[in-house]
Length: 167
Length: 334
Image (cartoon, rainbow over all chains, first blue to last red; front, side, top):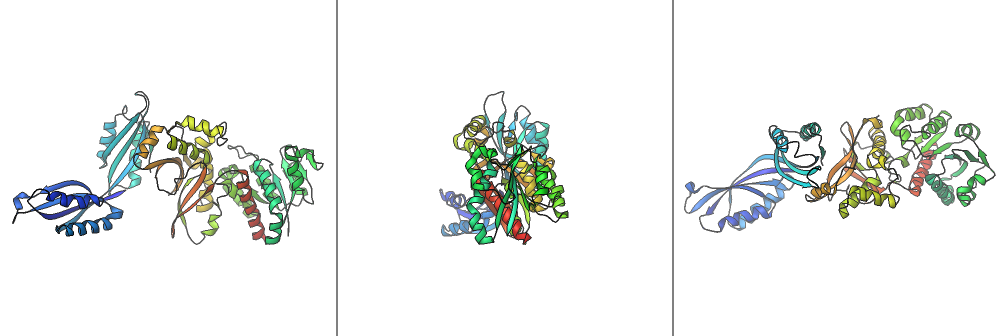
């Protein structure tokens, strides 16, 4: 799945409860919010500039953004500025084998050195000494081809005698 | 038009073909002016032979005791019959050694060398010697067809004729019903691989020795034929990267499920690679089929994906694919 980073700047009245008015149209329409900045130092007429950054599924970007803009407008929150950041692709991969015994941190760090971020890790065990099943969610920048990412991962897995299951 | 055929192998598929030909004889005559005469039914130890056409009803009524019929000739070999009987098409449906493709490979090559068109339900000869078989047929101005060898009745190979104006770029498929059954049961019930396999064996879905299925060799053979036929490649089974499903655990499946994903044993043609391995697919993917079904998703250059799905095994299914091939050969030969 490819996500697109979206950055929106609005002005909100400096009164309690107004932030939720900004957040709900974004989260209700598929936005994954990860930063909100209040510029109190730039407050004018009790209005504070607020910058909110979130991810949207690239395929649904146009529909989601149209809905977000419409709902914010209806709440009397016009958008001052909208910018788009980098595209981020997410990959779910399941790795089986002795994932932890073969130094999972080393695996994560080696991928990070290539710009591949491990965003989530979930593990299931049967017995402690037996192989584990670990689900990774990776964020891969646009600059790295999917094939290149998979080859990098395969190389590590082969070296550590791990098996990977990919989409 | 009279067409003389010989059937090599009177097993499940062969018997189903005899039944189908008996059932369809009138329709074939009416619709295609076609009178298919089976002049020989060959087994490993002899053959039923009648140059005027074997009475199929009589053969069927005899069941396993067909060797008692007066026209059973002990030790008759296909090669002797090819020369004697003026056969137009040879139908090859014997049990085959997966490593050598024999005896089917020899039966096919000998038929082609004797000027006889071939229909086969065997995949072994085609994933091992595709190029040689096709070249021999072409050089001898003959037709060889093997629709039943991949996904049985699903028109996995004939689809090429329907897409002449298009271009297939990639293939993702589920080509082994046993693996799909096992993975479907593991996902539905949370049971272990060995329990699902045992269940499949009890139901007659999996073989007593399931190695060829669960380790991916069966699917790999079919994938080679698909790539060669649909994309014009010239690969053999040695070119396929194969991983089986025996190491999949309920925990692996559970992890996938928590993200709306399913694990399927996919056969893939992508760029220059042939791969058979467990893969993650979305729950709403057209490849998410249950039980013993087969499915193929063909990516085409001008029309996006095309999906074919259906039963990929069974006697009557394979027999209907064979009959289709027979009719198509006759049509092409005019």
